[in-house]
Amino acid sequence: MIECEGLVKIFKSDDVEVVALQGLNLKVEAGEMIAIIGNSGSGKSTLLNVLGGLDRPSAGKATIGDWDLLQMDEKERVAYKQHTVGFIWQNNSRNLLPYLTVLENVETAMMVAGKVDTAYAKQLIDWVGLSHRIGNKLVQLSGGEQQRTAIAISLANRPSLLLADEPTGSVDAQTADIIMGIFRKLNQETGVTIVIVTHDMQLAGKVDRVVAIRDGMTSSELLKRADSDDSLDTRTDSFGEHEEYAVVDRFGRLQIPAEYRESLGITDKVKLIVDGTGLRLEPPSSER
Image 1 (cartoon, rainbow, N blue to C red):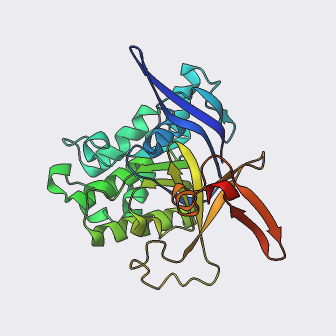
Image 2 (tube, helix red, strand yellow):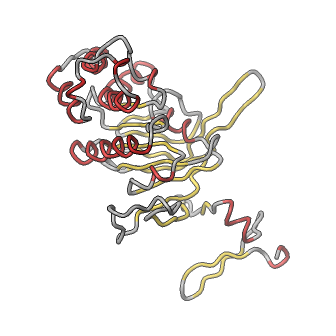
Image 3 (cartoon, one colour):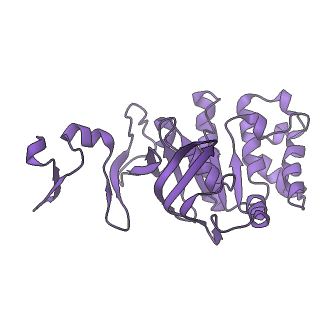
């Protein structure tokens, strides 16, 4: 569904250039539900904007299904945003029209693409648990209900990819659990691919795969252990029921997280030692 290879995004302002993505690699299979984590400034929101067709990549490869995000023209970009991708913002004011009802908000999103399907709009509202609020205007809804309305809107045109930028950042923990449950249900029942950007490892622990980004590059992946129990409360552990793996790109280059390099004293070179159990990394003798 998603394939990014050597993805670069440079923002230019007057004489200043900021490299937000520095050769990032990412693959997401159709029907996956993953989380992307990273500190502020790591490039995760820039990546989401590129995948959503909001920012044009500067270099590298970025494809979503049959769409080439680097080569598409503006007409194709509009069609891509209307029919292939759905977006959920942390700030509800970017998702919703406050003077319309829940149903009218979902139908308006359909209207933009040229076809209103009221029966499907009502089905979406039922999926997010807001049938009892279908005729309410947004000012009558709680923050969590507004965010659930935003999820229904994002699915209005049956996208194959759903992007969510900090979707639980403005709600309490209980509501965040409800929203994550809705994502999981939609993923399982409709097969929509879901990418969630967050800085919250508790939320990220509720998906099967977590991609960590540092300094505009993919640094590691966290995969759910095969013997993990979804019923366990793993929030006391920063990695929950996940194991961390370094990422190897197609050229065989290994991304070693900064904290590991620092703990081993590795700077510009590393010694590779193959023994009977695997591969061991050591700094050169002169740097120990």
